[in-house]
Length: 455
Ligand SMILES: *Cc1c(COP(=O)(O)O)cnc(C)c1O
Image (tube, rainbow, N blue to C red; front, side, top):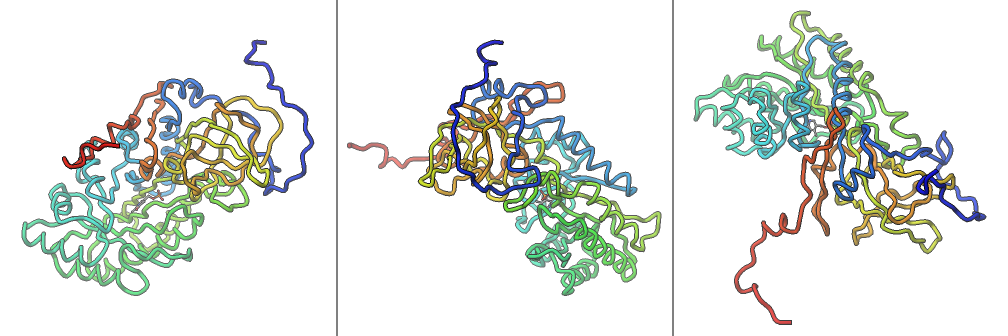
């Protein structure tokens, strides 16, 4: 036995019972340390790329995607995924999805250009979002992208551009609706129940200036109810069939948006998300059954598009960090301070992230609060977690962080870390460098009169 294998000594102690929130596994959630990702040592990753560091598993991205794809293609004849750029738009990540056959789903001019620069053909870009500028629209029309209209002002602007440039935009409308899940998302697109969606369809069809390609909805995010998707799919199918009756026009696709829950655990949930959240099969069953039951002719089933984001990437992402210090709150509660703050773990506001020590530990656990390094009271990673004791310099793995953290992260107080992708052969690649002072100050300009001072 080498010195490093030796069990760590902990002095015996008597401890008052503390009532944590029990789950069906008891109070303890972690039994073994996590020491590698896809065969790569976590300690080595931290040594090579610094702490904290985001790590993505290409193997997990691909296998999760294939699982999702299979859930739909085994149930429905025509399926197309479009990668939601805002969920994680690092080019390397987008390209893994494009290699798997995903189109691009973008919600801004910035994301649109990113997809074009990644080599996605304009025809395979779905352009959502309320803020498309005239320039964005002209570019998208010329590239024959699929423009999903959000509001009437956009619809009229498209008619104006179509007239001016003598072009025929390919469009869909975004529809919002009551799916039995509240609060209802009704700020995007046109409402189904109150007739707005029909107003938009009539305006498009009667103008004769646009090609109505599809119907789109995105009913919410981190949805835990597959049935909500069944309701949404039936409503879009109804619209499509009525549209055919009224105008003898068939839409080519029905786009069900994103929103499937990932394996994360929402704050306040009683059981871990890995046990309770619906699977791809559950969502696929609801959506495809609704479409198969609708009155489409067999040879005229619309293409089913899915813009799944978080459920495809959350599990592939890890955030590795280091314990800075331990202290006690005035109540005696153990506080552990890590070098991971909410500036890079934005999703800590919604999730109780699973956290695992990255080195062997002893059996003793204690109710602990995990704080980040920012000088801010809201910098809380876990308010309450039962963890083995961690010492200064120990490492931890935060799980399921692949979605949104690398797009919503903030440069606040400190700099953003590297992002590393472990490829399917187990080789790590830096896919985004860490920021430096120079990254930030290169954007700043100091007026001449502020260039010097005497203290
Ligand atoms: C954000 C978004 C998605 C992806 O949503 P997830 O909840 O990450 O699956 C898909 N479509 C649209 C229009 C979006 O805005």
